[in-house]
Length: 130
Image (tube, rainbow, N blue to C red; front, side, top):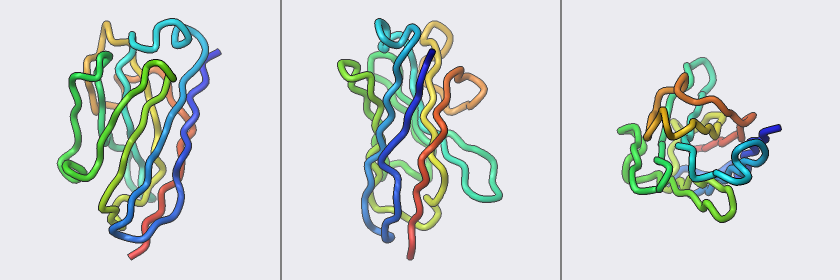
């Protein structure tokens, strides 16, 4: 059974930093974590979920939505089955539940489109105060 578990959320002041982590285990992930493209999504209260950042299977390709470019950095550590998101210069608009997701790389390279992903965590809350 695949488990996707996010951590690292919390409350912070605007201008601060947080680092989110996601560990994926079970199923094909135990032996083939690098067979999957990974992404971070977020959903703010009253808004639709949006893709924030993605990374391809080898870590050589990343994409970000424009509002986070230069502030967010996505990375992966395949030796630990872990995906991370470094968030700097936090803004109140970053307040949301952040979700980690994975997609088989034979179908997806790096995508910010939610339906492309098959595996999802339950999310971690990020709250930014001004």
